[in-house]
Length: 327
Image (cartoon, helix red, strand yellow):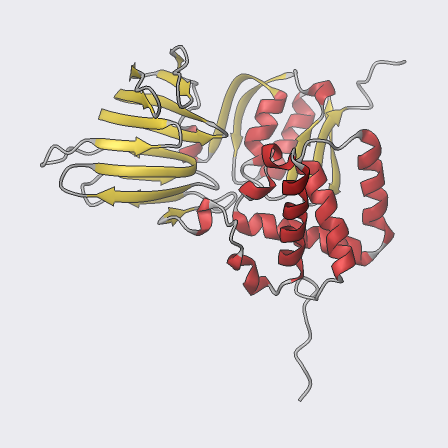
């Protein structure tokens, strides 16, 4: 009996080609890709079908994680030894059978948490006490209920929480890497960012406490604040669209384009980049998150930018040649 043929996505990759794709992937996430590097990458990608296959495999590994694995994050990659280790780990995943991708020891929280979502996915949960949660894209939580507390451990992404009354009057807590948010009969959003957390209160009030030093701040309805392990930022008005993502809408008001593109990137697999030349442009509007391609098309209609598609998984928002100033 003949062996079952591999599909293109499953076909084994030569280790040398996988290593080259891993080098490009890690170089980009180290934040050191120059214009010349981008041109060289384009040439490498077009040189052979195996190169495109290898790049797609690298993107698939990332997509299965729901986000870029922490081991490939920019801070870690500033150290050569960590960068070499990241390249080796990614190359091994790319050359392993797809079923083996989940065995990576550096797996992100989405693979191991009690409740999780992948890229572009949201999920609603109802807890035993009646509290309702909604996980945003690429998010992960663990739950811990006992006689004294109701605890949500936010490991990645964001969660919208609508708390219910508890007959035992146990406090409702959301813990992040930077501290704890205690709900006071409320509806609020907690977001885990890179070395920072953020709380936006939609209804009621939330007490924020830092992990180190125990600094506290009470936030009321329509207020928000970011915090790290030591310090809580000055209270600011909550963004108008702070909880709109739970309805499938990205609502922004005068947001910088690079920040906006960063938000869109959370909802699509692969790499979405905003060039510095257009980063400071401002955008306002409400965009449907279930079609990020349409969002990018709308951005090109609203602003003097163009969207450059190197591949489905490599997209750049750049200055429009039509609107560029003559030299």
